[in-house]
Image (cartoon, rainbow, N blue to C red; front, side, top):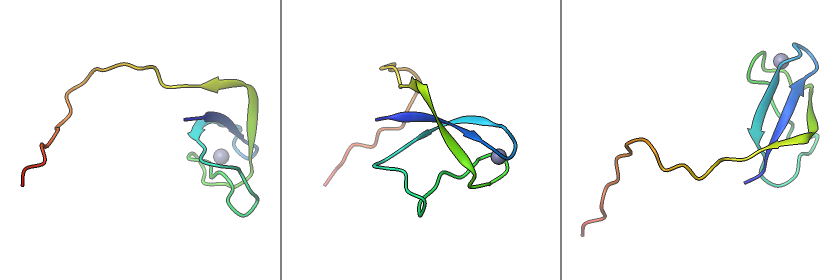
Length: 64
Ligand SMILES: [Zn+2]
């Protein structure tokens, strides 16, 4: 999944957020720091999750 990096133009905080689809003015990215909608997407830097299988996770087996 595409994870873009955003920057808040209010508190100048950079954060990465997973974007699904396209970013529209009606559905802006909210700054997790101050909660402002004035965020800009940064380019030339895309983060991606590495396939790292670590950590215990409760996996419930589906039993009928
Ligand atoms: Zn902010």
